[in-house]
Image (cartoon, rainbow, N blue to C red; front, side, top):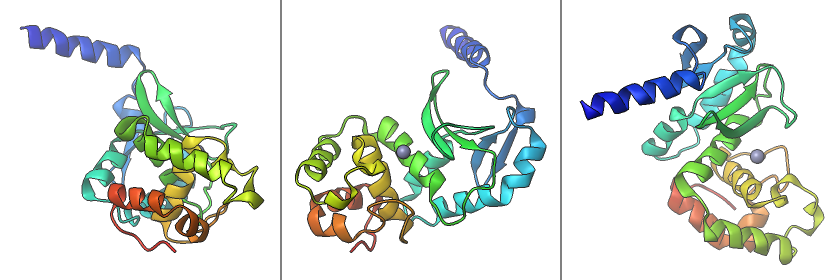
Length: 203
Ligand SMILES: [Zn+2]
């Protein structure tokens, strides 16, 4: 009886928080995509580029449990964002990833980057290795030519950008672009990523 009451409470909370109704939900590549804000036509027209983003995540070589975790994060399609194509954050008590319902570039790991933010927030939490490696990156001048770059803004972006370089396996569109400088100057951080996501080529 107690359990039933708790369950009802959870359901009621979920409804009050505006969870997507089944009609506004589509499962793609095992990801739950909520498209209520943009409508089904908007989703349909950008779906190939969304699926390409999911394929990048699937090919990232993370352990199966991590891929399951990534797929557990709702992908909420929105009309626009002031942060580019994607954003990770908490909404109505849920960790979600928002993506703009527009043609997403095929050669950028946008969804992977946002899922790494979710991983950091839910799986890792405050992590001395990330904090210290970020501070080292800023203070020691390893990336002097990229001092204003996104990945040096804060530890979150540092983890998501270096992590997406590590997992994507190709050059990304923003500094430090590839594994060369992180592998040369911050091998301890690369070893940490290897512990988290398994060994990947990174030089
Ligand atoms: Zn980010």
